[in-house]
Length: 257
Length: 283
Image 1: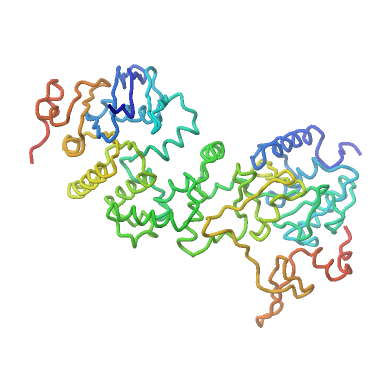
Image 2: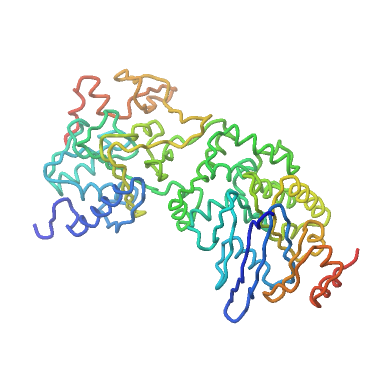
């Protein structure tokens, strides 16, 4: 039996009188895509920040199991180790690629940065790996020396994904990866993410307010409302037969195209 | 002589600077903040270097000051005169005779000994400043030895121009731990810092930082395995002394394209020519 990659136990976090996280527990298994859905202000992004260690909970703990099966408390970890984890085993895809990319550095440099941060010191191999990843995310390899500011929104997001995956992470956090893109570009990006995830066996925690994105990518879903997990289960099961009144409302409010 | 103190600075200030120097020597390459004082010359003229020199100077020391390798340029002459007036120390232009050498933008060609101290004037102590504007962030990067960003800069250079284009202030790793700015010395001089017998002190007055490389410490320029660090040197011999291994200045001699290349280290050049010109400058 495989053990969970990431576990959260009884997370609580208050911002003043606002309960951002209210007794949240979850587990993520290797190779699994878990979607966190809910409306704005439901605590999705806060949960993602706490799980990835960039925000500390008032109570509860997040445990990460490394490839040697040793458990690490993410919030008790020393800063250098957490940073090392973030640039090797973990990846983070932001909603706005401009927050993650270095806009003044070429596409190749952006993809290579994580490799160099990990200690890669061979220019030729960094460059060939950058070329491979650009091809992987369907960016013309000829544009390797172009600056990201000459790229379209969809290309920027694909570049961010290439940059994140260059170190072969096991776990990727994604915060609304398709937000702000038009529908056709969204569809293409989702297709790309889906094929990469299944081929590379990535575990993904995906935050989205878009039920369609969750249905397309996620195996399991976690519905949040006011800092609480109101329903969790297999994506199709939850979306086709929602039990909690809030989930029912959420599912029924999606426009049918 | 009311208000006079040896070497201009008052004793508590010197003590504060010495404490910063000790800390800097203990952590090679780490930038130690210090309370830089107003000095009787403008920022950018070597206020950091002067304060370090003032703090370490003793009555028996022999001081040499160079600016771009030369002993006879304005900056070098005025700093040398300053110390001969406020400290009464002996000054020299000969590298071999000096016990303290304050320098701007060069390392002397003559190898230094372990009884000498080299003091650098530093304009921008933070090697990551051009890449990451936030002081708080660069501090954290130093703390975590997170220097991937500097390699991104080198990568960009090679991708765009085929080679690393940094020709001065070439970033170095000190003691395999801290990334350090060697001050704006030419990349040509970078390798001289490695395992140098002399103590190297760096003072940045405006930025209020002191750092150091203790004797015999490894100083390694950053590079890639397949693009190793390469020395840049004008492919000429010195017109005056014929040296083929020294760092050269290009001097335009007329308005018809005439030029010559001469050693930037004036003492080294004079020495090779047989001493005569070395005595030219009276301190």
